[in-house]
Length: 89
Length: 415
Image 1 (tube, rainbow over the protein chains, first blue to last red):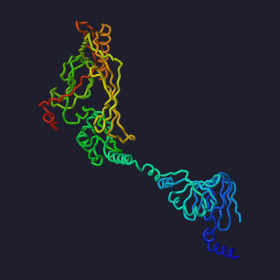
Image 2: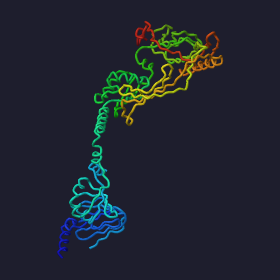
Image 3: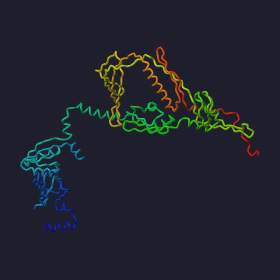
Image 4: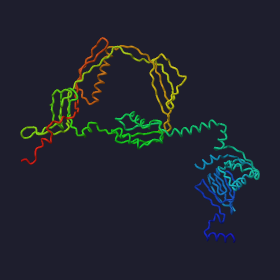
């Protein structure tokens, strides 16, 4: 309930959700580029999948020839052939 | 592009990470703001690029995550500099080269002259030399617009100039007044007669201005007046009341005879090449010629020398004062020979043809020729005449007679 009320507040005040709720932003360009920001860290990384931990959930990106172009505290850029983007709790 | 340049100048290493918790290692790097790029998984860990600064901060993280790192490749300027740290002369040379290039780029090394037909290129280069704007002068000291003005005031033929400097090349563009000189002679007030420029027989005469004094068929000598600029105005009594002066203008064609004589000596010296050829390369820097010390040629033999010069330049406009001179020495011997009659005949007719061609190029119409070849003791002589039809117009100022138009002015309203 607490989370719900916070969400409602953020919604009604039109505050940026990534800052207030710690929501991850995933920007997908075509089929070969994914930009993830507002995350906590990498959990697993292999050629065929990358699992990224965010505040609320995990994001699983699977495909082939996955590589991380750059990796900083704020954002990371993944390139390769992407087949699936999924969310896990 | 810019980012990769920055990366290159700061230097980075390509490393392989192996061990217990490489993912944790990556996250810790993220937390400490250490940039990692081109991250790829490999068999037992990861491979990635990391900046030199970041690499130095990795020690505690490595200990914490119990991972090992191995440098695979070093890229960037800092490593290159480190590698060449003992090559001081090389660095000095590089610096000297840069300084020389910079200093030399402040001078004019090439001059191009366009659009000149009356003025020769040498004339313009001499003019530039007098104005201290020749080869090797400092570009900063040159004032193109004042040079243009000087050039225009010095040479009246030049009606427009543009002097530009691109790089180390000066371009002088010129527009000359292409009207023939006669046309502007007539602009002044002097009145001209047409006189004969050569002896001849008048064939055609068409007068546009002035009084013709000869008719077709007349024989004239050089200097005879053909068309006078003086026009008589006759009054009712048939007396000359006054003269009008107007420059004479006419087309006059006359038959002119050119004497022709050509002597061909029976014996002549001919060059015979021995086939020996030597090539010497020289370098000319600032007018100082560096010769190849290992080059030798026979002092006794005769050589025909062909020199080929090339100026060094970067791009089209950046010319350096360095020339490569290639000299080819062709050895030859002088051999005395004599012409046979046929050879002499052929040569004589060739000479005659060239002579006629020269005449025709001047606009002279050849109507006939009469040339004979006679064999003398030492030579063959071609002798004769060439008949031609050509314009014999030349101009001299008209003599002004005493009765001028003002004196003979008929009084108005005398009726």
